Amino acid sequence: MTMIEVEPQPRIDTLVRLPAGGEARHTEYVGTVWFDGKPMVSGPMLGRAPNAPRGIRMPGLQVAFFLPDSLPYERAALGNATLSVSVVLQGSGERSAIVGAAASFVDDPKGSPTWIQVGVHGHLGWPAGIGYRIVALTPPDAVR
Image (cartoon, rainbow, N blue to C red):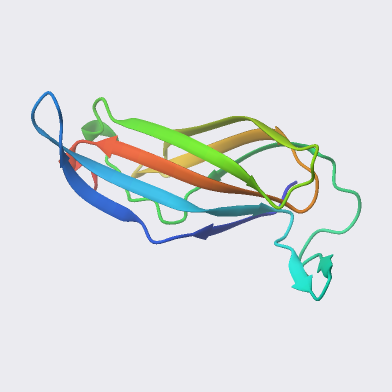
């Protein structure tokens, strides 16, 4: 199991006017995700965090995580909401690649509310991290 450490940046949440008329809520989520521990810089060396898993880390990665700063969405009010995602490698070896990234609205296991989940598929060395930017365009009343 891959240990995931998410470091969100301040969320940007604005009301925008749509080209076809009407308004939408435009929310940007930005941050960094470290897989199997954030590296520690010590002089000229790069070391594993004390809480990082020990042993051999396989480079194949397929994980999903919830945005810790996701707004609580109301599923019935999402309508034709859209999510766009972009990711960039941070701190990974030269033979690394992200081959897939997607964001989706996922219902809480308790039924309500709905949160944003990000899925990443790739081949990453260590240290393995990505920077992410998720943009949610939703109806203004979709947030609880």
